[in-house]
Length: 284
Image 1 (spheres, rainbow, N blue to C red):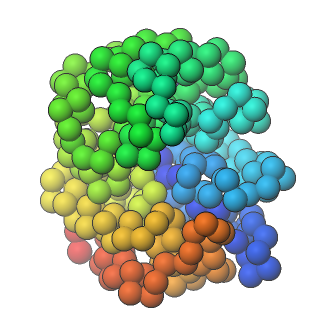
Image 2 (cartoon, rainbow, N blue to C red; image 1 turned 90 degrees about the vertical axis):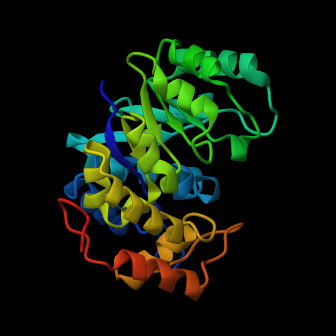
């Protein structure tokens, strides 16, 4: 299995009556795949999985499994119960470094070793220390890469730090490093990342896909501005606001504890999203 290119962690669109809008979800998935994404992520944090019922999560998986017959599907699953719900046809499960408890690098390695042994599909570890409060030095990431059943990592450390530079200078063989901080995807690709899991790529999908396949600095700088605008408020609120304004989803609604993005943030992101991105270069 090769993990590379662009993966879009899909929002969960809601209908006016508050239910999950499955037809809109199916259209969004088809749109990003048609525009060049290698695959999609179901039930990642962008999809607000903690606010969905078990039945809603199952329906999301059913729809996206159907859309991804010829594309890669990564499914968010952070514990043994969640992993059991991942369809065997999925490419991988996106599994968070354990948050809040700060078990240390040894605890993280032991925890993810146990989960990988139980998982029906390979794991992509989600390392986002500014949310989990658990830093990992480069040598700990190399230990994670050596775990049987671990295929890669969504690396989202909030920038390009010394451990990222050390990791990218000598990346583990067979271990996919996918950028997970949208605004920093360009410099991470420049250092040799294999691709990215990029929520911003609901917009300008073809341009983000082009960037992940052939890094180009000018395109990277421009997409960073779009990403910054889309993350001006908690994700995915601005993305939903823009998709709603474009007529691609029926409502901009999110579920608590999130609140809808303010109109100024949505207008600013629309300005960035409406600049006529071309498929080949992202230039106007």
